[in-house]
Image (cartoon, rainbow, N blue to C red; front, side, top):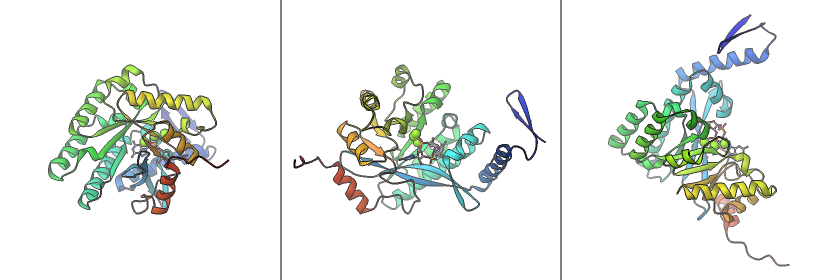
Length: 290
Ligand code: C2E
Ligand code: MG
Ligand code: MG
Ligand code: MG
């Protein structure tokens, strides 16, 4: 039998009868080991700027190399949050991102990084210290780093998170709200945060071109972002139709499998052929011959 405490309930499973639980315990053990062994790396997913078709920024998405297999963040971050490992994982990811930026700078490359971070980790004192150190001594340009926070993460946290965000912001780091529209941010809350970007959740982007309702909502989200003087990015763009719709409706940036899947450091930057196709799709449309 395996006993597992969750809150005040204690659940007992008969060994062998619950593959889910066994699988989960194995995953937990593996994840703890991965933290000790630094078995994480980033994949990078580019952002395309709609005004000029330029790519100079990517989101850093964490991957876990588990016995030769690459595990997506979606398949281990929620567990890490649940079992209290997210702080250490975020800390490692933060360092990785800073050092990658320093490396790009040293190579003379203009790239920026957008990093996901949980609200509790933002309030960690060490983050500021490390950032400060690399800015002072490593020549790191802090505006090359954007921190993505989710709406729901922001909400249950407090003054502490807000003041940590303000400190980071004062250092020159940029702030983005991730998965916008899928959480519960109030206008009052949005107004209190110095956001540089909002990222509209993929679930609203999927039906552009077929759902009038979603189209209206996305238009409203773009307006809202601009009213906050923030850039607006659409997540999860998969088709040229979505790309064109977003450009025609004033969205600033797009991200998604149409531009590139998240990919390794060597392959994240779209090829000239892909960029060419994207830029062609963004060019003002000629009236089609009847
Ligand atoms: P997110 O920040 O909203 O990241 C976008 C997720 O959507 C990524 O999944 C990405 O692979 C996926 N995606 C991107 N474009 C498309 C598309 O066109 N279609 C579809 N169907 N999916 C697309 P991933 O890498 O598994 O990450 C999942 C979530 O895990 C992220 O959601 C983010 O909240 C979290 N995460 C990722 N890396 C980190 C990290 O370093 N630290 C923390 N705390 N969270 C992270
Ligand atoms: Mg994100
Ligand atoms: Mg997102
Ligand atoms: Mg999302």
